[in-house]
Image (cartoon, rainbow, N blue to C red; front, side, top):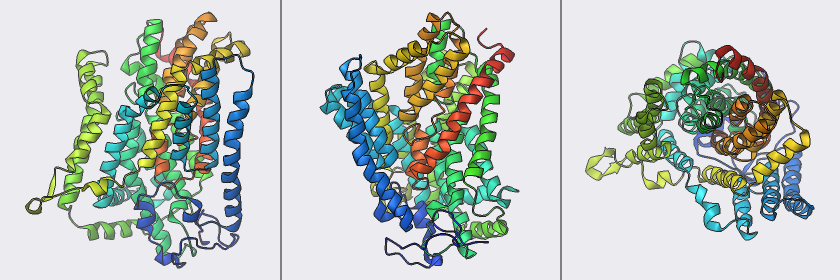
Length: 554
């Protein structure tokens, strides 16, 4: 077996690297737990270990962003477009922000904040209106879920879960099985639990599994001097499966993700056709299955694990589980808070299965058990459940909570702001109508293809929720004007809104995984672009077939 370097290359051909952080070169001395479980998020050039060639490329890429971002924005603003000034200004700023995100000229969360500040300075909208969406429930879901994850990491519960998953019969035999098994769990959970919540609560376990594999590589002498545990190909595959698996699994039920509920309500209001819970699942299941197979296959091909078989992992895991011993009081408290939170997240979905999503019971339960409120209440339990009552010691201190990934929270908050502004300024409608007129859409297939493409493009630059809220209202009148039944195009747009895979801001789950510090944005773009294309093709080909077989929409 060849040695493995920081980006998973064969060390026999890799350029020798120089350490930039003063840490020891001996691979046996690299602290895997600190690298993977230490809460790292965005890392600047001075914090990375790069080869000379990589360093030159990174410097050029990031420097180019400082020039491209303002240049592209100014060029677009100077174009003689026949659209309202506020729309043109917003579009120009968004182009500049996207350039900053792709090139990482500044930390990605900062790029979003720059865009928000410039939007207010340029008079697109008042500051109060621009910043209001930052109070979204999803932001509080992030905060609560991240605090829960911090407790799991601090007290070792994440590592315990990781060893439990690896100890399942057959799972720990190969790295490919680990990735697939984790993807199945993610998909099934995200069908009933918020995608964001699913990824946030499974992330510590995924990091724990990655730490186990990294330690195995380290113990076998397969890591070269200066290796970086956060840049293993198996880590890329595992983390991207976590993010993308949640997006795919969220399609399975109407309550799996907000875009489903938004699109379903808009379609029913416009067409009068009700989509039952069972009908939705029957239609979505084949699409989810095909996408999952594609995810597992392509992720493992694009990010070929450093080792395939992990012989001896069962003995290693058994020894580590024995070393951990019984659950500590802090672990039990964390597990209680985690269980209460997940139960309350799942409960509205159970009510929907029993009483239906149109029932008053479901409306009351889902309204009061808002996922953001549940997340912060569950996290609050960590500050109420004692580990030492005599000294008034609790499961978490505020200093622990303060170490959560605020950068990811800021990143997605700015994404929500951009999505709201696209709708409020009418820019989304302008883009949709202009594209429709220019392309001359008249058939069901053409309008559906346009709906899917537009939903994916908008989802890449804003949240998937914003994409559904913006695109479905555009597609319905376009279809009606062309004399086409809007049901298929609108439902296709709803599905496609969840298929923004390329950027951290595209979906909350992408942002959470990016925030772990284990997936470079270039790797996410490379993998996500393939799944954008595959997802669009799968929806276009399978959705009409499934609707005809299930009778949904007739």
